Length: 436
Image 1 (cartoon, rainbow, N blue to C red):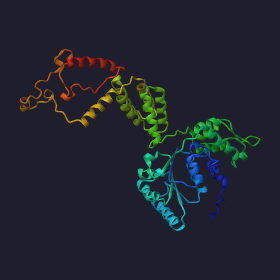
Image 2 (cartoon, rainbow, N blue to C red):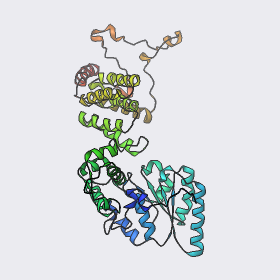
Image 3 (tube, rainbow, N blue to C red):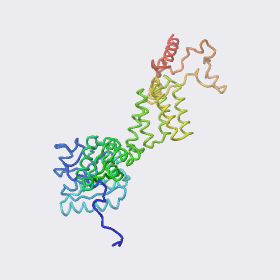
Image 4 (cartoon, one colour):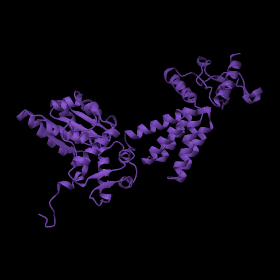
């Protein structure tokens, strides 16, 4: 024994661990899965679990559910953390599970926390045992399983999606902690700005409880012995708002999708909000700028041709100056693009033309459009009847540029928005001349 070591105190564990519920009745949230009669609750209470993936944001109860299952099941329960466990650990559990089934007729449940951190080889090692029922797998992940769990394993598991906790659910968890925790209840803690604590937690119970515990430590003790936690202690505990954003995970795709759709939908306020969410979450500003260049062509196009120039200039400026000033440039570009007239006609034009090229035979280039760099080619008529547009009135001729099969084809169909309204009028005039 270390001479200077002191016995571990049960009060030294974090608040979130001290108040972790150990029954389904005490569990808060996820009522779509755990209310009486709901599927996951029925399976847990009847101890008839099948392999599953629990997917949800941090602090929504995935590990707590696994521990409740461990307490309630008659199966042997093993827990691994994907960060610290490898294939060797998995195989040891699988060997024990095989012995349980063949010798004792007993089921084995294996809970893997952060299963998205297992690589393909580690996940492959689970496949056969999950398929044969040697183990019942419970995987917990904060990442979209369709990206992070190999398809063969995902297809063998039921997927349960957990949601971020609501304000009401967080309020209940905080109330229970204040009244039932052996430490906080003895301090007679009051929280004067509970709404701020809840708002800054982002639907994460663990974050709310950790911040509450820190705020209690920061708050002064009153003469009567109580502790009053104010907004100042809450903000000091957080230091900054928790922004739920993972640059490599699903939230990355969700928020960039919301940003693009807000710009496309001509809502500059929503666009700049989602932009701020990405920047506060640590997104690469050049990634955002690149997406706006694509958007300027795909969703604005010739309705406001200068949008592409501005988006390209935005990327250059962001590359030059970096953060934090780049956020101003990104805001200017995002709000401008959202405010532009919209057209996807150029995008649809290349889509239609590409479809024709993929599905139809290649047409020969009309002779009058062919290049004639040699005497033989000139003798064969290459380019002989070509009309140089600038030699004609209005710099336009009625000659045909598409192959005969497509001579009446229309791939580019300008909208009536912005500059494309003028383009549409001009093309209609030229089209009528060509028809004559």
